[in-house]
Length: 283
Image (cartoon, rainbow, N blue to C red; front, side, top):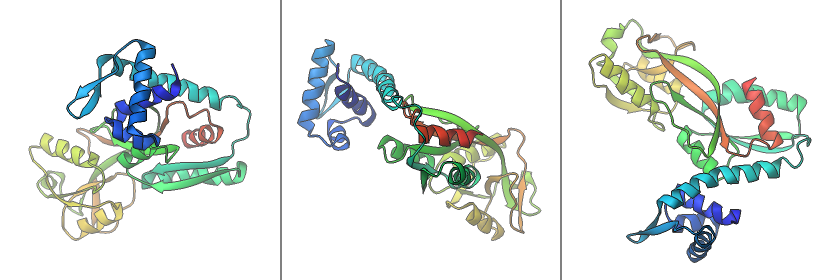
């Protein structure tokens, strides 16, 4: 069983079509089909079946694809482990959300510059779903992502995920607004991620309201400006300072916590620069 054919099956399980696999792997569709047919012959199992004009994995195909994730990760780890004593060096591509970049990545960069000048960070600011897509396309090596305890993310097996830190969030309102009066106001949520909207709907429902989602913006600073202008309420980190005219009310029943993670593709963390940076982020 050749790993390159197994990779095609794993990619078909992820992408869902021969055409997309061909584009991702820079092959022709017929080549992908031929290689999967050889894999099926080697394993003695039917791996794909017609589904209209497309194909889908059979139960056997899904089982083999699941094994393939583990097998390919082990092969990658073995390749990277051939020189475990190598000094970390190279460009490490990181996609992360702004708070994690400021809070975690930039302090790590300062230590890299001092102690490991051969490792260079290439930083891209992205929301989690964008960072996951970049991981899958191999355009970044590390993703800094988040979820909320009230809107948890289920990480696929193809990722290795390490928790970094947790911070409480509260409900940001115009100064002097009581919590009981805040639920019925217009709400401000993230324009590039739906997680805080899920949290807002959960919180409001627990307090007998359906939130009116009116404004969407990406910047937490802009959220505060909208609140000062009387345009609504929104979620903000509980411990951070806010501008005059904004008050962050604590949430206790239930609490709201943002949880940050370092995420990489399975089997990649034996690469010295990636292992080094993940260690710095968690220290």
